[in-house]
Length: 418
Image (cartoon, rainbow, N blue to C red; front, side, top):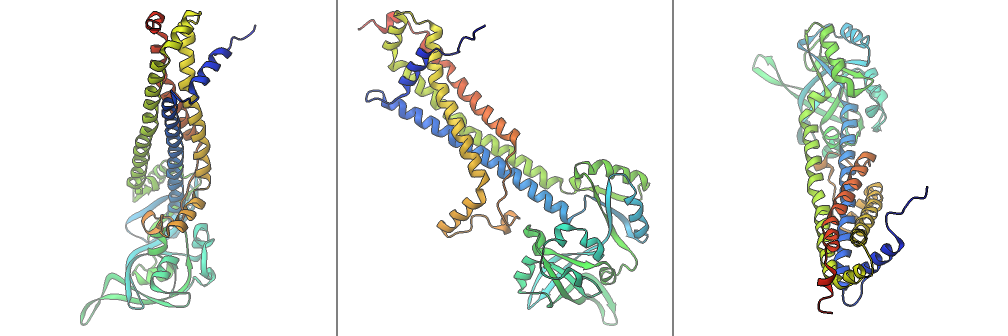
């Protein structure tokens, strides 16, 4: 059985002839060209923005989960049996590792400057298993991370204070020490064993790692830990495993997973992503309205030609398909060009950013503002499919009314004054 083509050769010939610019109706073709450009830019912009938003989420998530726990088990008081608890947690299905941690806020002072920081006391062996830290030591040696007077600091903190491995920093704890002259802040000097860089400004500028024993002494938690950091094999199932931990420990500890701890942050990212999608989709919608206006003007301009075609035997369906093909050609071509442009831009966005910064002489992507040291982008197939489908649907719907209007023209009216 032979298939009947949707558009006949004659219909395609007439449609593409109408789209070509001529002296008398060139303005219509200009409008069609702007519509095509608008659709291409709208599709490309949506693909790039969705890729950047996906990249932001993945980069932030990988860094947050690389330096923080998937699940945190904290006591209502310092945990004294932390070694036994950590071993028990490792036996729970899905748990990969459990590390005792002492955590506290401090004031850092060095070379006349000061800033707030978060100290995390962790054993050297547990720190080496944090690959995001252990694999990103920029100066110094992680082997020197031991004893009771050494720390690891982020590269941004080292730059801000002008420090290097071997230098000393003073940590001031908000906890006070009682003396004969009253309560005084607790101060202690620590030697910098090395610097790390995870690529997230917040962590590189305000996190300090300290050996667990040194942190226990400094924060006055002898033979105790403030919490247990639990890592699981699938972070997306952290909530389920957290429920198992809570049930197995009899509710004696506060158990929270990373989704609960960072819920406000990732919820804000999702809301921003959805709003950006809706706003930028308006570009495609405006271009679709331009298609409607250009086709209506084309129908009015070709009224006599439509009447002649109807007189020589063209059906209403044939006329409708001719003008539908005019509008669909603009929409499909614009969508395809936007698809190629968007993918190309998203794949090379960091390089393009570097060129623009070099040309403008300004920093377009400040890590202090955007948390990350580079501009990430990850193209997801379902996002691209959704954007392309939406563009095609809007542009094809935009051609229906002008096509119906062209098909409904009365040949007698079109030739009345000829």
